[in-house]
Length: 115
Figure (cartoon, rainbow, N blue to C red):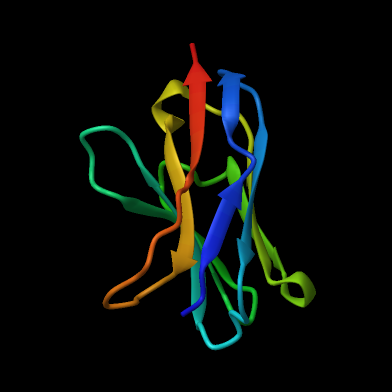
């Protein structure tokens, strides 16, 4: 099973930017969609951005225009560029394939946005 390791989180002021990275232990070519998820305390995990194997992207309305998902297939790495961050973006961010019945989650990376 492919394992994912997320990095790049941190503490940033509102309006700032961060770039998250996700490294996969194996090939992700078998997945039709890869995505970035986030989970804030007390909330369910939500999908915020996804990218297809062909490069098509989709975003949750809450991040549209501010976040950009992209990937480096050669290095099996997924990225999330986050701009104009808001306090409500504070959460643990995870990457994973989209649509798996029983996904295995990594540790995630904490993003904290101060007001």
